[in-house]
Amino acid sequence: MKILFLTMLATLQPVAVEPQSPPSALTDIQQRDLSCVAVFAIIASEQERGVQTAFDYPLMEERGRTYMAQVGATIMSETGRSREQVAEAFVEAVAAQQAKVKHVADPGEVVDAEMERCLPVLDAAVPPKPKPTLNQCAVMLQLAYEEIYGREGLSKTAQDLKTLAAVLDNRARERLRTEGYSGNETDITMTQSRESMLAEAEAAKIKGEASTLDFEHCFTLAAPKEKDRKYEH
Image (cartoon, rainbow, N blue to C red; front, side, top):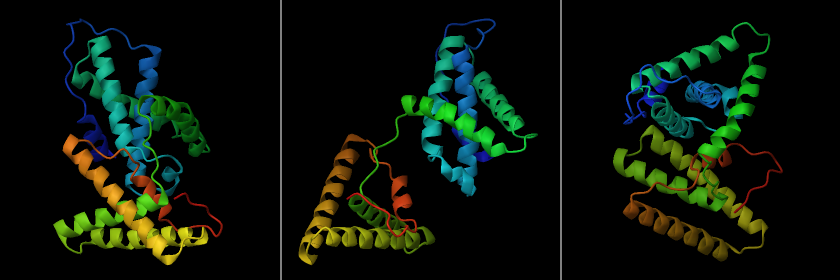
C-alpha cells in the first residue's frame, strides 16, 4: 500500500494561499473528505494486490487519485495548510481507518459502511466514466493489444490483451447473431465499431484528451460469464 499511497500523494500540487498561522481547523466536511480519501486509498491498494473482496467496489486507483488531489487542493486553499501538512493529514486518516478494523469481529462490515458513506461523495466529485458497450470493448481491447504489441512485441501484457480481445470479439459476434444479424452484417457492424473507435481516439489525441469511456469495464465483460448473463452492444 505504501508505494501506491505515495503515488497518490504525489498528485498534490502546491496551492498559493494567504499566510495563516496557525492553519484554520478542519471542518466536518473536510474531515469527512480526508477519511474518504483514506478509505479509497486502502481499497485501491487491495485491488492492486488482487484482494478479491476489494473488487466488490468500483476500481479506485484512478478516480481515488483524482479525488485525493481535489480534496488536498481544497484543504490547502481553505485552511492555509501546506502540501506537506495535508499529506500528513492523509497519512493520519489512513491510520485511523486501519485502526477501525483491528479489533472488530467483521472488518468487512466496517469497510462496507465506510464505502456506502463515501462512494456517493466520490460519484459527485469525480463522476464515473460511461461504460462502453460490448462491441466497443471488443474493439478497445484489440486496439490496446495492437498498441502494446507494436511497442513490446508479444509480451505477457500483449498476450493477455490479445486473449481478452478475442473473447470479447467472439461474444460480441455471438450476441449479434442471436439478434438476427447475418455473418456479413456482423462483420460490417464490427468493422464500423472499429472505425468509429479509431476516429474517436484520433480526435481525442488531437485535443490532448483521454478517453471518456471506462476502459476497466471491458475487463469485467471479459470475465467468465454466467449462462444467462446479458450484454449490451
